[in-house]
View 1 (cartoon, rainbow, N blue to C red):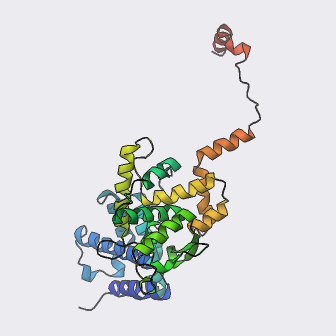
View 2: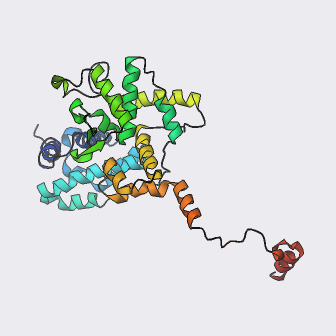
View 3: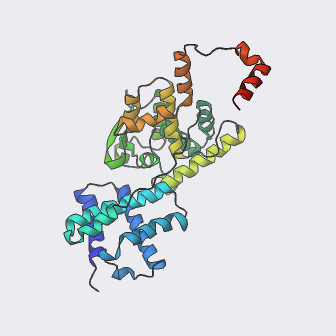
Length: 339
């Protein structure tokens, strides 16, 4: 069977354009691939279309709208996930309109589908005491416990995303003073993050124990699972949940109901901000492109807002109620007067 124009363009887009011309990261390509896997499943299961016969003109605006609604209603996806899938579809049709100008109108119709607005959730971060309780949970007398302690300490100390920690190899770590770790983030952009002395010492002991300082092992994953492969995002989330549950059993008042790996990143940023560190340095540590992204932490810190307001307070509001407001008969008379 001759491949359709959709099959040809999608295959070329995912296998050649994104990794080659665009230089897109592997994680982004996988996300785009998953989006179109879901779209094809929707076309097959919900619309009764034969996948081998789907053409570009099949993917009309109404079908994409129905697919996005299906993601939310049938699959229970959040608005942010729905918007992420739509962003992948938009990116593909921007590519198509250059490769297939005859479908320009179709592409523009799909590109006109707007992102869905959602209610902003409150930022979830841990207090210093909560962070200490979690980091004290791993059993440092066993091999796995020591690995987990170093993993969680490094994730907090560097403010890294969970995928950035999973992708680390031994060569990314520089233990000579000043100690640093090279973090590779979104868009394959790398940044050097300084390591605090306690974390650097823990990391050095861990690397010696696992022979990761040997030149022959410099390409090995920094954190490995039982199969000697690198830990996955799900694996790191599982490890974190284990110690969060232990800490919560000991300190239920400190640990919130939901603690994700990204919560460590938020916590590090908030703790630095509360310590007076400039937003520019926090931006560089987190790998944000724009300072506007980092400003969300300043907006979320209610304690800093309160302190700033108290420092600027001029005492214009009287501390006691005026005499006339204490006269209940006068207040009643004034209310009756307005009727």
